[in-house]
Length: 200
Image (cartoon, rainbow, N blue to C red):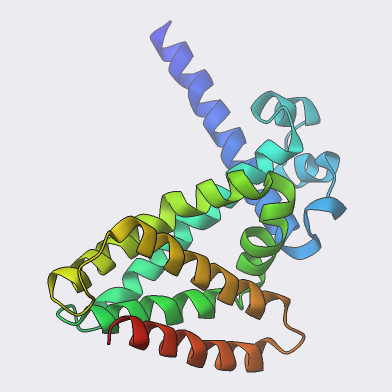
């Protein structure tokens, strides 16, 4: 019985991964509204019944895709930070902000995280998921900056929320721009000034 249960669990996990992978590609290319569940199931190689067994609503499948993108994005952003001087929290903040703005130019991040995310999930849920992955990283760097005297002593949580909000707005500005390259360059300069002023 245990072996059978494990096999069913494995099959379920395999189906779920296939659906998330297929939906991720389709949502990125066409947007959430333009992709039906029948197409997702077909691309994943499963039945619509199997899709609805895993995700009773299409929005729940989108939420799973969104979380997968967020996890990978935080891992990638985390890889950029060691390139900065770890003893200089300002350099770490700038490196993280630059990596986030670069990511905001990628079609997958633009469509799933920045554009469709708030519309499909609702602002509160979109924000909660985003904060779950990004806020801890920003809070840790700000805590280091305060401990080192680079930023005046103050509560970390409100400062981290304010900075994350500013960075999200900066990324949305780039994602919605008709000329993303110029928008990225201009917003990069603004964010650099903001972080430099914060650490003055």
